[in-house]
Length: 393
Image (cartoon, rainbow, N blue to C red; front, side, top):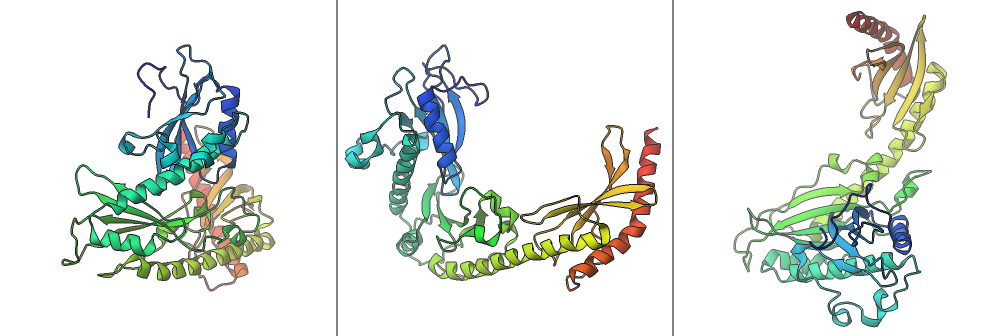
């Protein structure tokens, strides 16, 4: 979104003038207290001299995507609540035109707006987002498609589900469902001791139904497009992209599909938690053979680095431990402490994963086999470093 033609042009976040203090306090409160990963886009000023800034664009998560809304304050009247400009594709979403009807009337945060309350903007965003969720549900309910109507009647009561229209210029319109999986109270942090996550972690099933424009099931509708999507931080525990989804049978609906998928995810999360323990024990097993690691990932146990010496040759061994450990072996990278390339960067080996390995070995044997492998491999790496230095001369 951009401001009106007679307003100053939008500036980037870095080059924008500072926001008026009361407005900045509300934006900062929003960013630090929101449970959603809201992002700030452009910040600009409604005054031609560019100071102070009093409007900005927020990217607000909705249905596994983002909607972009402009929040327009007036720096000359900072006590007044902001106006909100919605996207051009949502011309019919006008909750601020008649708030007594479309919104919450006297219960709305706008009815009791206090510019000195830093939580005001967060409350407004939450309120508008809830209204937008209901607006999109009404749009989808108007779709003339028997299957979509049936899915709405069976799964829309599930807590946290969101739906929206997906218009397209080169293919029929579609309806997207964003279905939260697992129990709403599921605590991912309990799976990871010392978990650093600030925001709640979620896994959603994205389901996209093509609109058939048919009022019956006379012809078997095509299967929807399915995709698992998680919050970015959760990839440190479980990569949902690697999860093989269950097949969608002819005539199946979401109410049938979801229970088996959630059971499968529960099992995968238990395995992922157990894998952290296995990786931690592997890192601990490095110390008796290689010496105490110089550094290691203490939370997810995905990385470790040890210092090794062969004669006068000193080098580092970096361990990248996969999520699927011990089914998949660590990837080793050797780094010389004595050889640098022309840019002054330490010379490193290509990733190594062709050493002896069995997931059935205990951690001590895994480490011993790696040690035996590196006894010979470090000589190859030393020659690799020497050759690289010779070629630079």
